[in-house]
Length: 287
Ligand code: NDP
Image 1 (cartoon, rainbow, N blue to C red):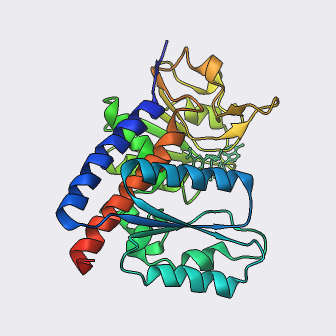
Image 2 (image 1 turned 180 degrees about the horizontal axis):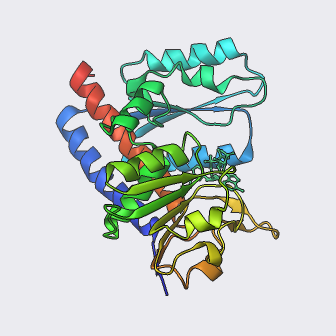
């Protein structure tokens, strides 16, 4: 029987700690951290994500401005709006909710966010910091995974860590963060031959694939720590991860559920980044 890693509880702890720090910051500086969230179009999933981010801001005491833009906005106008937020000294962090509607260039839009306000850590400068391990902002989802490991007393040091997935937002930064904490890291992807042979060597297995119940029990070593980043729908439309939880759980030592594992941590780490951005902004601009 595995210990179930309770991401909902840990995320609530992180938010409570940030609330306390934010109250202290407001008392000392008379200024609240502020996040601008830019939502383009009416994608229901994006609307839910944006609502959750605004709700977390409210709970912690971070000011949030949600900017809702029509799906048919031009690229030029979108970039103009992002840049107008970038220029505001009272805005500490900016995020553009991805994916953007068809016809808009996400890369170009993101390039309008200056690195010091890039709370999603997508800017090439911040990606460079992730490579070097001298983080300005932690990429939210992998940072959430690391926070879960830390708070459950699991150290990657000296362990074999296998990450399935090599996306820029999850797989690659996840591997880097495990490496910086002295894990021996392997990244697998869709071109990896004999995937199960690789995953069976993992002491810590992170699945960031985007396929329901992709990681089956035969792919997991007895006693492994299994972290499920995936958010998918199963054949009945029920939310599920990349891991076949029911069959993998008895083999694992620790496992994250979906929902209630990594998901809530991503928003908590975004709040952490916004707080960090505010600290940096205030020390630079005394804004
Ligand atoms: P991407 O689609 O960008 O990347 C998926 C990765 O999985 C790719 O590297 C791909 O390999 C690999 N892959 C796909 N099929 C296979 C296969 N058969 N065998 C081995 N590897 C495979 O997804 P993301 O990284 O953005 O997201 C992954 C999952 O995490 C999704 O379910 C997403 O919803 C979820 N997610 C959850 C978050 C949270 O807050 N919990 C935040 C972000 C994402 P290749 O590169 O070769 O194509």
